[in-house]
Image (cartoon, rainbow, N blue to C red):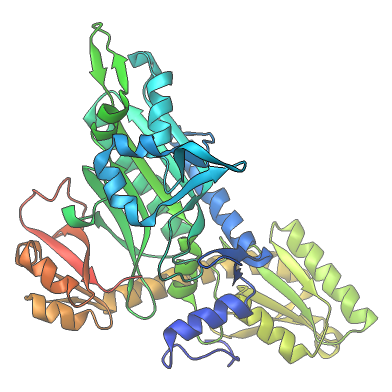
Length: 469
């Protein structure tokens, strides 16, 4: 851990620590309407990096970006009864606009399966139009009773993918590809966040889905956070919205559809996966600022050296910022530690007299002297080491705080500070109700070897249970 800061310690009050980090790292503020948030530039820079990394992966799977309206006719949602039932308490409905009562109320999108289904039916004519692979980056509204910045807000940002396929096999294979090549790859290789990959039990599935796949992360307080989900929708939405195609044989056939999404909740997941008592800790591959160059004194020679350091790092494709000094050196260092910038280069007159600067790792606080000419080669390697170390640390935490148990009662006890893993047969039915009564839920189902089952009908499955955000 880096030097002590002005934050509430995690062990003292984890929710307060989280709020402190969001505020003091200048990530976000509460919006003027309850449940909304204002994402500040530093928080948005992190989200933009997440967008960029996931968008590139999404496009590699063949999906193309589009945009659909914010307002959805209420009748669209009623076409898929299970869907509207699943979202009914969270809907924001507009009944008046332009000074008049609307002939039909419109819903502010909670998700876009219904409106996109309407247009899929219009655009798909034959098997030649399939698969239709769409994604959009948008905002959605789900009226939240207990809001918390990034984790649960009434309006949030996300990407939502929607696809249509000729066969169930093709839809399932594509959904699995998204879950693996987009979400898991991003979480592991960019966010440095290990998760449990599994499927949701029927009680936890997305409304209208036949199967929901999830990436469940463990936060530093032992609670679970659903990081991303992928849903196989079977033909449920295709039936509701008449999404048919003409087969090669000339027969009219129903499509199979999928949907999948990840949101600004990932920013909250980042904070709670890697953060410590000194603040946020951003993995180098994600960080909008990978290195901050901090001057010890506001002197011409020091400032000139800081600029030279920054230019050499920029030339080495390192994202860098120079802090020339407003306020004391110690206060500025603390502020950058709270923001979680992976590496700090300290430039001061004493070191410069020896032709060196000091490089400080945010995760360990380790300091090492480096010659000015060697930074461009040393820093990228240090960033990669730090990235690997963050993942290894989070992986160890996940494993160490997952407990194998043999009863629902033991699972409830283990969920006080981590995950519990036990036979699904012990939980299905009454066991799930018992867990829920203690604010514990089944996060996902897995095979015993940790792989993801095709469905909950497979025998000999285990489940991971935890308290969650």
